[in-house]
Image 1 (cartoon, rainbow, N blue to C red):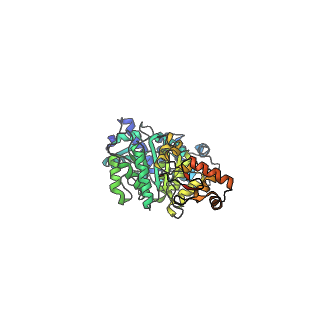
Image 2: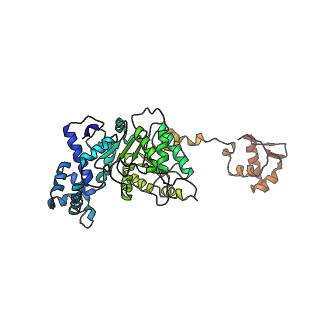
Image 3: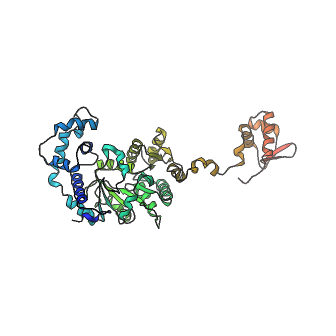
Length: 414
């Protein structure tokens, strides 16, 4: 058994603890609040012992479990103690933690548990929804130590990304990665893949955190989708692959939804680059909002279905409008002056200094044909006195000239 493939030195006690978590992980589906509640009342070893006691229900613990869950009835079977124990006990004959750890080791991976120094502590923000453990694959396991929230930015979106979505995502991902931020996503087609690829284009990575992290919905030994297997293998080679389900687990729709909360919890900022009205990316954004993470969305065409979800997030106030990679840098604090100096960065035109009447006068004047003041007044609808004041102001700004009777515009080259 290759348990010692973990990225940190382990002793016999840690090995046994890792076996215990691997065993629990094969019995209990992720995001099981009842299991999390029980683990606040007992150790993982004690929970396994309880599961092994066929037909036994610790009714004395039920009021405490219900109190932790915040429920007063047992009508919700997913949170019912007896139902939960029954579910877990049915899996006992199928659990093989030694085989699971060996499979991970054969794939350059292992198991992270909450007592490990490399455990990403921001996952504890999920409270009862926190994962039991995390399976990982990485050619450079030391990168696991850098998977902390301060440097993580998630980019998620539609699987059927448009060319616009791909370009925006690539630009965002590469800009953030060149500044040392880890790009977190789900490894799917479309926006996910573009985000990962953008991070991997940064060569000679010199940061302690990985360039990109993929959070899988299935086991780390089952690269999904298969069409992205080359990309996912590149992520294993240079970044980190994570999953909260044991090796051998197939991807399923509910596991994708469960996985989304991990992506949100890992990251300090979640960017939705492109999303339909009912996109799974909106589920990730919702988790991020609940966790108090920053959320941003990229606007698109009002005619594009792939941007409908982004527009909804912005309209609801759930997400900041992301107009450029510099906006993303400002949100993570990489360039605190970016947002404040945005106006200064936009090229200023001489006409930006004009008031309302001056602008109306300017708009009806010509560069080639001189106009009398009364003609300018008639065309613009600005009264004669204000028109005289306006052309004088235009002349002072170098925008207009006069021969003493008529006026025309002066080209500024802007």
